[in-house]
Amino acid sequence: MESQLSPFDISGKVAVVTGASEGIGKDIALGLARAGADIVVCSRREEVLKGVKEEIEATGRRAEMYQMDVSRLSDIKGLKKFVLYRFGRVDILLNSAAFTVTKPAWDVTEDEWDVMLDTSFKGLFFCCQQIGSIMKTQGYGKIINLSSTFSRSIIPNRSVYGGIKAGVSHLTEALAAEWAPDGIRVNAIGPTAIRTPSRESLLQGKVLEKILSRIPLGRLAVSEDLINATIYLASPASDFVTGHTLFVDGGWIAAS
Ligand SMILES: NC(=O)c1ccc[n+]([C@@H]2O[C@H](COP(=O)([O-])OP(=O)(O)OC[C@H]3O[C@@H](n4cnc5c(N)ncnc54)[C@H](OP(=O)(O)O)[C@@H]3O)[C@@H](O)[C@H]2O)c1
Image (cartoon, rainbow, N blue to C red; front, side):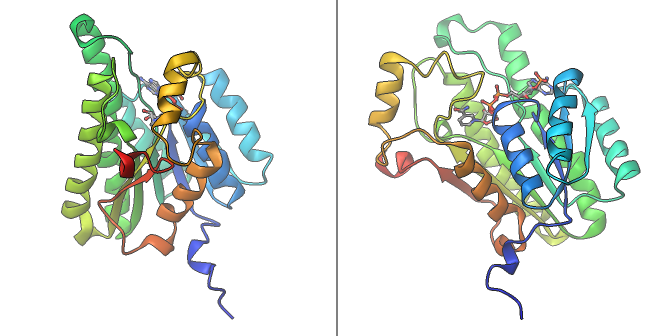
């Protein structure tokens, strides 16, 4: 008999994860593997990716790695070819790769603007387009983008980041509407702060206190919170959910 939990089953699915060398991308890649998916891990640092690939293989699942710079469309096209060659299909795309600077808007330079937008917005869009085109051929697929609570709320020194994440949530809605006839579901996860290597030095002292004071449930997010949300959005359990940003934020947005 089918269990009530069967729709949450992602075993045997193929997932592509960008930004998989560390932090949220790595943790979710491992979480998806523990839930039974095979994973293609992508980022720039080959040596680090190798370690992640081995950790995934230790769960008993298949892992492949693809070294790429997500800000280059040619690399993303290469990823598409690689996925088709190695697996012949893709069920899940998790877009986690991003880059941001934390500084007053007055001080943001043109170079910083370009890197932030190219990595976190252009790269995400073209990953959706290129990997999504495989899903279009299949008539089914699940795309999950990393947005943030800062897509809907403000924090000092993160103006460009917040603008990009608002764009990610908007793009998620636009692509969900445009690609629904192709069977592609596009959703986003909006975490509150979580301790990752790129955030560790920020989440200290007064900044940490201020962030915690805005989270009604009284703690930062942890990887398991995001893994569980991703499994839901990656599985058939969420087949009627598209264009949604699921805030995994302990009530931050509700209280804002
Ligand atoms: N941490 C938080 O508090 C938080 C909260 C809300 C939302 N988010 C979002 O969650 C996602 C992950 O955040 P995070 O804190 O774990 O890490 P992050 O510092 O935002 O991203 C790091 C990952 O992105 C990859 N990356 C950066 N530039 C790249 C490029 N040009 N090409 C390919 N890969 C690139 C890095 O790998 P390589 O260096 O190996 O290329 C690394 O794996 C991001 O979208 C972030 O905005 C984070």
